[in-house]
Image (cartoon, rainbow, N blue to C red; front, side, top):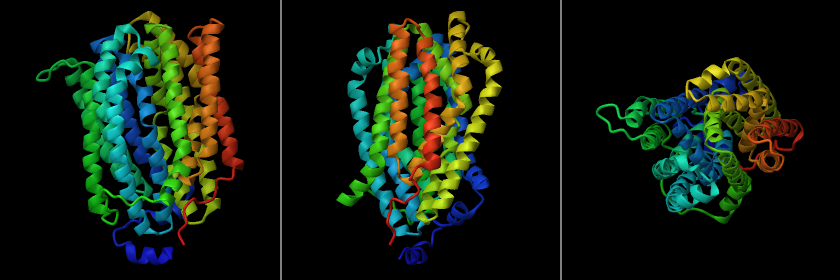
Length: 466
């Protein structure tokens, strides 16, 4: 049945990547698929670094503003991440099985869901942001007004991100990781170029500060949506994206089966990061700023993995769709090892130069010393965080997300939040009471997830193609 569908419904190249993904050498295919989103993420990290630098030129304390909003965005994006986890798993497995008509229907369903959820999340964020940052995040008064103006613009980034990320997921599901990566890199490159003009007010632009930084984010999402929509219509007309009411109970149940664990993780992860930011904010503006700078430097080491590990999900999903569970497990184990080594090398390179890197963003000796303490604790165990990221991609690609999600929730809530609170405030360890559990949680979670990858029963497809 699936083969017949493939023979009659693939005049547009949906399967041109399939054979290489499910039959090619694991390592070279992983790099072939992963390098484009890796480079895309690298450009995005370059933007974050540049954004932090220009904000530090505007006002050193303002480097903390995006970091105040980030955990709240994680919370609001949980629904988007959940539906896209289901989208990648379902569409990639239908493509792997050559059931292209089914893949087209799913594309329209997830596109419709993305638009509706994006609008709803935008309205909720705009309405509740003052309460969120005043009493939930406990934003320091020195930067509260800047956070409010930044978040007002960022609310629209939530809307456009929902649509842009869905387009990226659809293209990745068929194995096309290069062109969406190129489009996103171009969008971010434009952001990088415009950032100093909008933040610092270089002629002819007004001096907008944090608002300028937020505006470039929104502009980038709009560019990404336009470019990816063109690719989908031009290269994959079989994926006819349209608003649809064709939702049924079976579809909702399958999406919930795959996406609910991710939604639970995203929600609890978002709340955990909000509470973690609150704990940090309670220690004062110096610690808050140090964490913001330190996090940007950590992203230099591990941030690209969020792009690279997308290849793992694609390869696992299409391998299971092709009923090749042995290859899916081989992909999971080999890519996890590769990711661990890459992060270890990155951490080893950055560690000796951490003081010099910190000094780029601030001249305040108190902030420099606090950031140095954060990196001294975080960098040695950071490779285990790479395992966490890659194994979550294994869960996304296979559709078996419950166990890795549970492990992630436990490591973040029990170690980072609960233990962090007691060490920092009950035992009076201050900022080190936050930094140490943050690092240890990566090691504990990474080891547990590696064991699940090796021995867990996740190597069965979640879609039926006959």
